[in-house]
Amino acid sequence: MTMACRSGCGACCIAPSVSEPFFGMPEGKPAGMPCTHLSEDFACKLFGDPRRPAMCSQFMAEESVCGFDRRDALARLALLEIESQPVRS
Ligand code: SF4
Image (tube, rainbow, N blue to C red; front, side, top):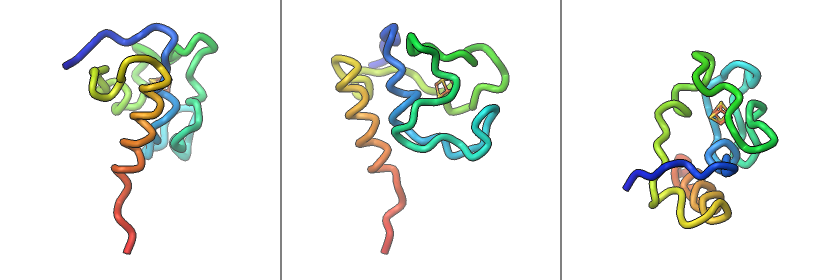
């Protein structure tokens, strides 16, 4: 179920990787690293800017991903990041 973003969260701008290059991060964003556009109060400084990555604009907060608080969201997103990696043989 979708939900409103928690103010002061920013978990989705830290835990997941962004594989595509984008403004300010020409090699994308590694998992676990805060995005260079994340403000001190955990807001996106590129919000509404066409240079914001498409995956950020498409992300919708939802209870199954964002959990019950920021810490839970960081843990759930980190786990999703690991689970979405290709299996190495
Ligand atoms: S561009 Fe904005 S929404 Fe996307 S990861 Fe960076 S701070 Fe977050």
